[in-house]
Image (cartoon, rainbow, N blue to C red; front, side, top):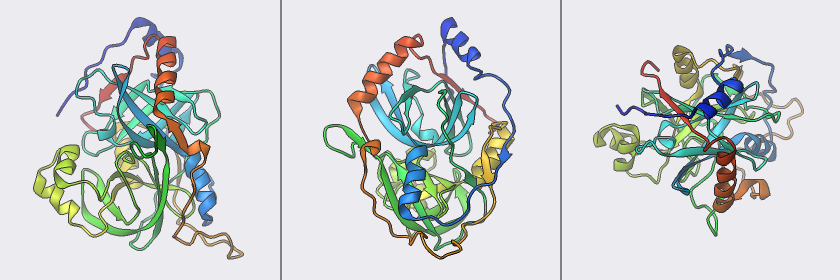
Amino acid sequence: MKNFIFSISKAALATLISTGVFASLPLSSTAQVNDVIKSGPELNEISQATTLLIVGIYDERPVGNGSGSLIAKNGDSCIGVTNRHVIEDPSGNFTFVVRTADNEIHPVTEIRAFSQEDLALVTFERQQDYTPIPLATYQLSPGQNVYLSGWPADSGPSNTFIRHFTSGSISTILDVPVEGYQIGYTNVTNSGMSGGQVLDEAGRLVAIHGLGALENPSVIAHKLGVDESTAQALADKTGFNYGIPITTFLARASQAGFNYPYTVVYSSPQSPANGSGAATGDYTYQPDESDQVRTDDVLSNADRLFETINNGANTFCRFLGC
């Protein structure tokens, strides 16, 4: 298992302490959240506001991107969940930034990677009143409609990222998860959408996407650190696109002490009382300006921010007991 080695300047350390990153974390919370089935445009609006674009930067150049979900806010600290393989840094020299729906770029100040599942938490600082997405923990079932949101790599012309939002249904639930992956679905996916959202019809996060149908077994084996026969078994499953259930994330996060103020709900989506406005499963959306960002804009904004906070030193920590 690889260890992350990090260094941080005194000025940057003072900045992190002053913003409360190392303060004690509150326990998870339960909130009353609307569980009514929503229309496609309503679901897309929820997803648009809470899907994160995560970009790795080395030597002033992007070295890859992934996706994430804003799942908690603790004071000015915003917490996102993504895949561990999205933020892996073999050189130890990468910096990471997060792009939020208001087109702001934020340096990642802390990464907490899980050791047993392909999951990680990223922290960034922002005073804006962002609303995290609720986490749903009821039992999922094959045939259930789900919606996926993420940022494919080079998905537009002129080095432009464009967020994708696709509809589909759960096709597979594995008896034995692999690196946390257990839920298979038919949604169209692409590289760069790893760490993205899998939503139910009420707009709650039910899984974290991480493996797509276009990936070959050798790539899967490398991402997950498993042998190729195990990766091939995953690739052979019907409807191969896989995510890690929120129930798995919450259980392992609790064991590791990653107890942020999540909004957790337990009810399955409910039909509207008047029978109107419900999602039909199939939904095609047209990206707007909020769904598009140029790579050059990300880099220029990141450079400005890193200068402001003394080169934006990242803190990496891996908890072996996760």
